[in-house]
Amino acid sequence: MDGMMTAALAPSAHRDSFARDNLPPREQWPVFLLDRPEFQYPARLNCAVELLDRNIERGRGDHPALVTPAETLTYRELADRVNRIANVLTTQLDFVPGNRVLLRSANNAWMVAAYFAVLKAGGVVVATMPLLRAKELGQMLRKARISHALCDARLAEELRKADAPELRHLVTWGDGRLEAMCDIACAEFAACDTAADDVCLIGFTSGSTGEPKGTMHFHRDMLAICDGYSAQVLRPEPSDVFIGSPPLAFTFGLGGLVLFPFRVGATAVLLEKAPPEELPAQIAQHRATVCFTAPTAYRVMAGLASQHDMSSLRKCVSAGEALPKPVFEAWQQATGLKLMDGIGATEMLHIFVAAREDQIRPGATGLPVPGYRARVVDEDGAEVPRGTPGRLAVQGPTGCRYLADPRQAQYVQHGWNITGDTYVQDEDGYFWYQARNDDMIISAGYNIAGPEVEVALLTHPAVRECGVVGAPDGERGMVVRAYVVLHPGHAADDATAKALQDHVKREIAPYKYPRSIVFVDTLPRTETGKLQRFALRQRAQQDTAA
Image 1 (cartoon, rainbow, N blue to C red):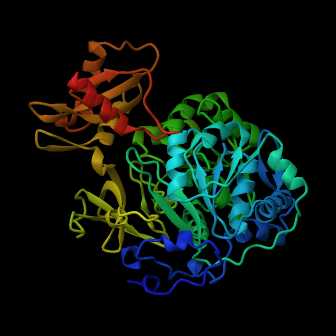
Image 2 (cartoon, rainbow, N blue to C red; image 1 turned 30 degrees about the vertical axis):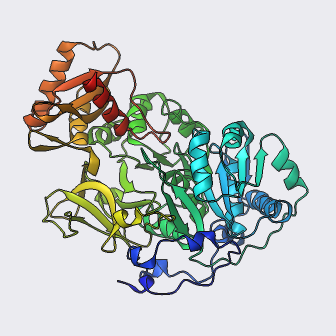
Image 3 (cartoon, helix red, strand yellow; image 1 turned 90 degrees about the vertical axis):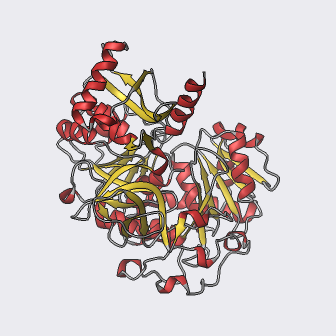
C-alpha cells in the first residue's frame, strides 16, 4: 500500500461536506499510485484554473478553445463566460462550495462553460446524458442530493418532471435566462481554494440495470488523466484540433474533447450531433487532427473515407467498447492511420490500458498506460499465468470511489480495481480483450467470448454490424446467438445464415460458431455508441420463452 492509502485528506474548501462525507471507507479505496513526478500535485489545486486560466497566462488567450456550429470562443472569451456563470452561481443562486450541480446539454460551448464554472466555484459537477428521462434523472438527483441544475432549455422538460426534492435552482440557457443573468454578472472570479483531493465530479455509470453508481473524482484526478494517458500515450500538441462524437457527460468524451486539448492549449470542435455518416465531412471542414469515437463509427467512416478529405487527421482514438481487428484494418486501409485502441472506465475516469502508435499490435488493447499497472487475476485475486483468461485488475493515479454504495467492495478487491472485463495477457505484456465478465457464453462446457465471434462475423463482406450473446438452450445450456445487420444487397435468408456460420468455423474454433443467427435492421446501442449486449440477452431470453 502506498502513502495515499493512509495519508489524511487535506482540509476541504467545501462548506457543503456531503461529497467528502459520502466517500467510501478508506480501507475500501484502491491503492493509488502517485509517486511519478507528473502526478506530484500541490495540496491546494483547482483544476479549472490549471486547464483554462493557465492557457491565458501562457499567452494563448486569443487561441481558439472551442469551435461549434453556433460560435467560436477563444480561451479568454471562454474564461469570461466561465467567470460570469461562477458569479451567477455564487451571487444569484445561493450556491456554496461543495454543492452538487447537475448539467444537462448536448456538446456545446455553454455546456463546457457551465462545467468549468462549477469546478472553479468549488462545486461538484454531475453531468447527464441528453437522452436520459425523468426517472433516471431523478435517481441521480436524489442519490447525489443535488441542489442546483444548469440545463439547455431544449432538454429542461424531463428535468422538471424528475422527482428531486432537494433541487432548489434550475436555470436554463438557450432561452435567454442564464444569458441575461451572465450579462449582469462580473467577468472576474477568484477560484475557490479547493484541495487537490476535494471531490469535483460525480460521474454516474451507464449501468444496464439497477440503481446507477456515482463515481467520485478529485480535482487532481482531472489532471492525472491528462498527464497520464494524454501526455504519455496520445501526446497531443497545441496546434491540434480535436473532434469526436462522445457526449461530454461520458468521461471518454470529457477527456478526449475538453480536458486533453485544454491541458496543452489546443482547440476542440464540439458537435451536438456527430453520427458517423456526418463526422467525416466535419473532420474535413475543420481540418481536425485528433478524433475520438467508437469502433462502430470508425467502421462506417472507413467506408466513407474516399468521399471526404480527412488527410488532416494524425491521431484516432477508439474506446467505449472493444476494437475488432477488422475495423482496425479497414480504417488503416482507408486512411493510412492506425487506430489507437484503449480501455477505460467511469470508475477510473479515463483510459488506463492503451498503446502509442509505435507500440500498437492489431487486435490487442495494449499495455498499461505509464503510471498504471495491470494484471489478470482469478476469483481469489491471484495473478494467473500469461495466456490464461481472467479478470482485469488495475491500479494507478485514479481509481474507484463510489458514492455511498456497498458495491465499492465488489469493484475494489485487495487494493485493485476489478473492471469487470475478461482479458488475456501475453508473454510480452500486451492485454487482449476477451469479453465483459458477464458476456462469456458457456455452451456445453465451452467458454466462448461473444466479442471474438463478432470479430469473425465482421470479416464477412455481407455483415455490417453484429452482436453476439448466449441464448438459453435445453440441451447445451446456452448456444451462441448472433444478431446480424447485413449490408444492402444481401438476403436475410437461410442460405446467408449458413454462409455466415461456415465462415465463422473457418475463422475461429468451430465450436464457437453461432448456432442461431437472427437478422435485424438495427442493434441496440447506448448514446455513446456502445453495443447494449444486455438488451440482446433480454431479447434472447424472451424469444426462447416465446
